[in-house]
Length: 138
Length: 83
Image (cartoon, rainbow over all chains, first blue to last red):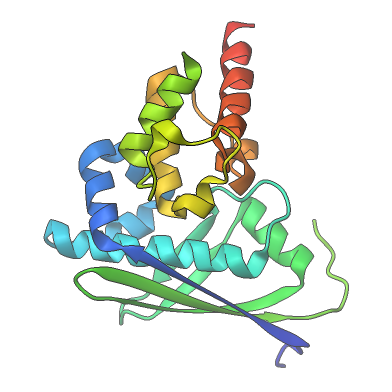
């Protein structure tokens, strides 16, 4: 049966690909391991320019998710918001730990994401279905 | 001394639209161009400069909203390292 929802929230974010490429060049693995999950890093392959564009799109997705979760206090660890890419290239958002708790508290029942990038910019749009019903948080 | 290091980090990694040296300590850094991604660079560079790691509960927009706010967090974390 389909989950009922009362409203939607939309989050969007834009990231310069060159900024991500420069950060990777400067901070290397420390940056990559701090922000992205193993699955995301495995999804962002190719020549450095292409990998940076994929990483930038995922960073934008994480920020877009934050815009729909609207944390009042501490924000979740970036790795608690994962862009999961399946074999055919479709992406979905997987939340864990504090990000999952925030979503439950906000009544977010479903998330959908779309990513895009060009040479200079990467963008993500996230749509959240929100139910006003009280949500129990474990 | 701490303010000088913070200003140097912001000048190198903050991508701000203004001269960091002339910035008021309470000026809102997001209003002068600090982006979410640039704040990650600032965070990593501060960790390198002060030899600590930002704990998850410090990862909030407010932590990086001004030089004074960064200073307060850095002071707290460096004191915690000493204790």
